[in-house]
Image 1: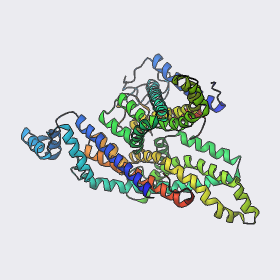
Image 2: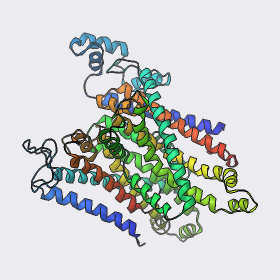
Image 3: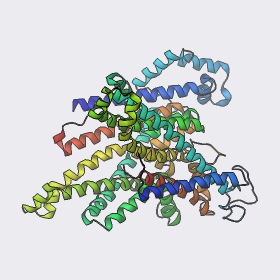
Image 4: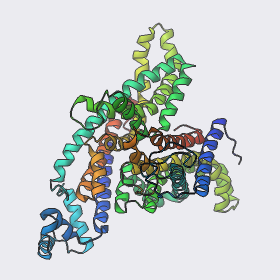
Length: 311
Length: 262
């Protein structure tokens, strides 16, 4: 356990350093005088003269040599001083918190929905076998070929524009959550139902499973005692590998449905070249990624304590 | 080593070759350019002059689609070549050259794996928006790690094998050992990864285009075209369908070509 936490903490440090360095390079690589740009975003385009720029330069110590500035940048990062947005002037940490809440809501809703779709479908196709199995697998291959945003656009066209069942974009009511969560759920379920099916097929065909039925347990009881855990382990482990695609999916879905989450914020900040927000959003996504990975490891251990802590 | 293909793989290859032919012939034969506007003929359905219709500025969709598909394939190809070569070379090196090289490369890989790939690409794309070169570098940087991990794991087993060791003791050089023992063991995995990598590279570029931080207008790119044509869905649904279908076809083709499922 200790080793696991230590490894994940190390990974988190890597994330912070990587994001910090990248955004620092980004800040330096932008054209124009940084002091003028910051002064312009603070006092408005018309009120910037060389005096204001000098004031800003003095206050933020912008004339330091690059390596010293890099050091300060990293030190600020370690103290979670993320600075203020260059566009809205709000503290980055507030907007990131706000966005993170929305992203988590979307992620949890999508994950639950995809489990509701993938687990029954996977179990069903493993239990029934062909021809249902082939049909479902073919269908999931087709859905997998569609990138998340294509899937989202299709759902949007059908459910929001054609039938007017759900709002097109935005947030606020539960209805707004349906389409983004459904998009995430379907794209994720198309990958994971195959894993559920493979895992279930293996367990159903194994000798310990047959034996427990031979010794007189009912079908349901066998599934409950010997099926669930053994099927769940590969599925959860696979989930850990697919987390990347889920986070990428969230970025795309949020942008498509104007869901005010972290991915949407990141895309907007990149478009507006709002570097503190880029840094904050990227940090939050990295941290979320590491956190979810840790959670998956712990759940794997809880399902199957035999193997010891995964390293 | 012979490549024997399953029928599904052949099917994938045919889809991809068909799209490639469309891209090459389309850009070559078309009398229009991708930014040539004709505001008297906007949002036209497919007809004799414009085989796939025209978009909201009256630009020929046939030409733009051909250009976009060509751009996607070009990016996919260079990304796969770069990341496969780099990942394979470093993977073999890490497995074959002792602990120090392995340790140093391991640190790099862990840093790269600590962030989701799309976020790294987004950050790098922010440095130079709309630059094809930056997209190529960023995607290759993210993708070589996959090859590295797989190749390293397989090579480690082969390096320890008696066959390779006796080969070394008989005095064969490193290149011969690589060709005779290591490459046959890693080739199938590298091929599968390359097929998925091609799909992912194209998908990443389309995703970035879709959220407006990738290739910039007036160039034609599949994701960008999706967003541009989305507002005109009710007037001209046949236009929006084109980039969506083509993206799905490309990804499907690569997945079929890969043969295996990851």
